[in-house]
Image 1: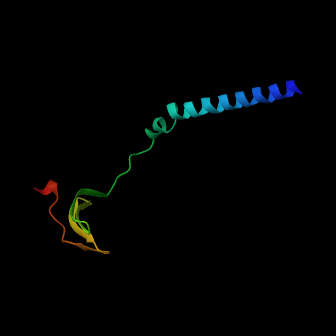
Image 2: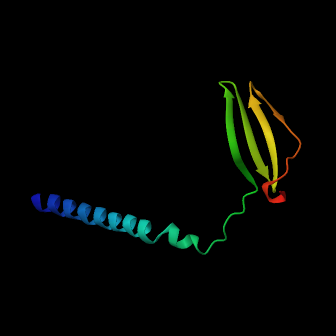
Length: 90
């Protein structure tokens, strides 16, 4: 009886040890090491700057495909402007 309990505890310890070793190996050699084989993502949309006007409204400058647009967000609606000159055109 005691021998089977010790055998079960030993088996549990070995299993947890192997699991811990696998987790350590994946963190050490896992996804960051594999990321160099994938091409970097090309993002088209970026928030350049955000300004809070009051608790209900906010101005957001958004860049989409090298064009910048100013958005007024708030109160359940958004208002946009014509494309502004991008920083590369100056």
